[in-house]
Image 1: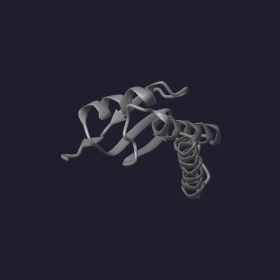
Image 2: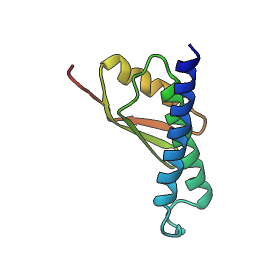
Image 3: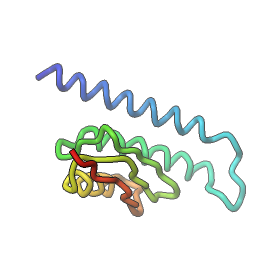
Image 4: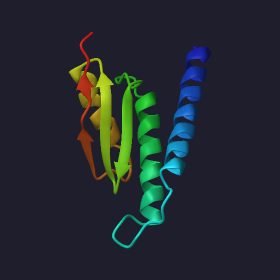
Length: 112
């Protein structure tokens, strides 16, 4: 039982590290007045990180192939899940994250 909890914790840490790295790589240009502010960019990164961590922790979602991107509070879910139930559950998990204004669920149900 401790091994499972250790694996979940390690997975969550890896997810956070990946999200922070991806956020750092995509912030190459300074925001203009028409684009998002630095605060919005940080908030979007935090939302993405929290959504990924919550998806990993959710027992009713098989989330290994779900990709999460956030822009101005709108979260896009892409990738694949094994069932329609997983697709719906993933959307519900992400809707529960603070700062999410809406979810664009583009997950595909993969045939097993």
